[in-house]
Image 1 (cartoon, rainbow, N blue to C red):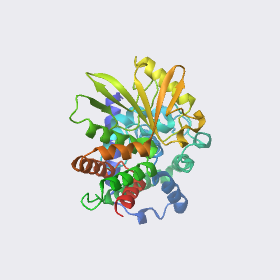
Image 2 (tube, one colour):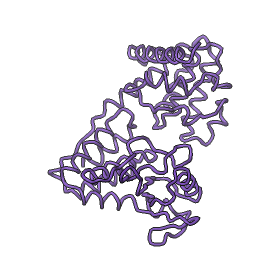
Image 3 (cartoon, helix red, strand yellow):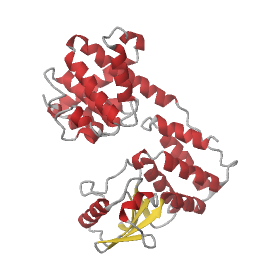
Image 4 (tube, rainbow, N blue to C red):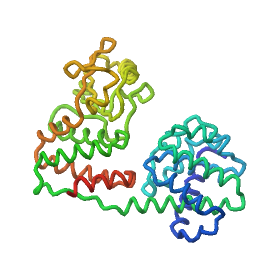
Length: 358
């Protein structure tokens, strides 16, 4: 079977499973052996902010459909997971089911065996274990395999409908002062960072508003978190260019910045011929830099390179104070639309409403 044909069949299969799931109800699965145990597994697997484990199971089940001899637990990569997910399953999920572009690869890259050892230490481990145990149930019970697979897709669609049903509130700028909105924006960014996706997008919107009538151009920030490493081919999350040349680089993070992170940054800067560019880490100070020790006037010198550090909350509040009311209103509208997207987790949506609906 050619790769394009296989990927097309994967997309058709998942699309049909989603359509079939919309016609079912929980009562259709009550007769399953160990219904309660399987139900709990699917809750742990699906009702989580981590899309990767849902993607692993969807890919495994699709691989099993394409090849009935496929063994996802002992030879996961035999189904060509990257290809069938990115060029098949993803298009069936897009706009219907919360997913990323490479969900299974994010948690099981180069992983052939899916077992408890693989699940150990994953975040959340409960979701990884649920993926393993659910696939074991599918493989060990050929008689009920079809019903178990239907149950998975039913719960997946049910979860997606819950995500879609949440209405996102947009604050009335006329009744809230500009700095109050800034504080709420900072609180939201701190409390619901989605591993850095939200801070990166927020800072990108602020930068682009500030430079919108400037000769400088803001690049990056509207995708999921870029890694600062040599494989990403990006020296930073966001950068400012003048005449197509980067002048300032910005890493936006809510994770630990340690020596390894600085080494990765140096390698990326070297590979992109940007060692002379200014680089700033916009992060939570001091908690994200504790392992580096004391910063001297907001700077940490490492291997001859000065790394600048700025507190994320202070940075947001300062940039908000520079904006006009119209610019800030446009940013809040764009951010609300971003939060409203089906890809945002329920926790992010609920967090937005709790902060901006006071």
